[in-house]
Image 1 (tube, rainbow, N blue to C red):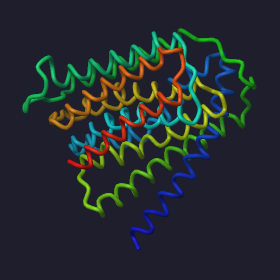
Image 2: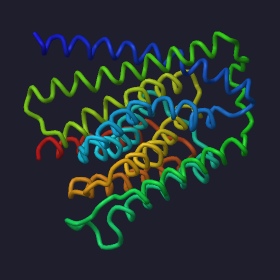
Image 3: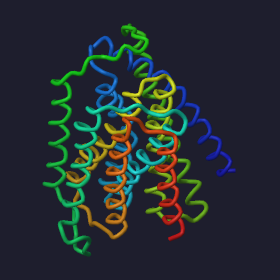
Length: 313
């Protein structure tokens, strides 16, 4: 009976995610037009912050209770999931247009941040059993997030003219209702998917980097696909890059400030894969300034292979 209830709630959470994403994308585009900023800026900041709320809740809660595998595994797993399944899956449904600013400013910054985390965790000599992630390293990451967001709002990009429509009071209401639906829907998906996984005997680390990561990334998935279908490519990819940056700098930064963490071999493997995924994503963004269906299929395939080895181990 409990298994049937978990399954039913997972289905309900998916419906909440899709409807919330539909409202969120439309209202975010109208707010961007009113504020005279681009869809990319809105995607990188406001939408990304909102869709990162599930990762924030799960990771901070795990950090407080010193569940290192879940606190760090959720962030790294979510970011890999964002660039693999979500960006790749979105591109398979509808190719995503990119541009030089997205590559030179936001994409390269994500690569630098990911590489920085690798060296903060492991130094230049790779993983060793005494590796730890401590408070001052978390403070460095969180300070970088504050600087990046401040920079974005001072360097306003002009808004896109894709079905321009100014925001009304209902736009802001739909934005927050949509955000609540996708955040709470993501929370329900994590809670009940994890319950189903434990019923079948799956370990905490595998749950963290697969099911919890997928569940907490569900808002990004719903938002990016809805945005791509509506032709709002800036929101679609900006949401993913921005969410990855919020996860690494904000969520992981605060988790480090709250509690030091022991770095395991599993974390080393996942962070190394994340660096490779970010590098590949940048390459795909740069080729012909679009991510095609075949390139999206490549990203999805890499994530599927990685999941296979996680479950097999």
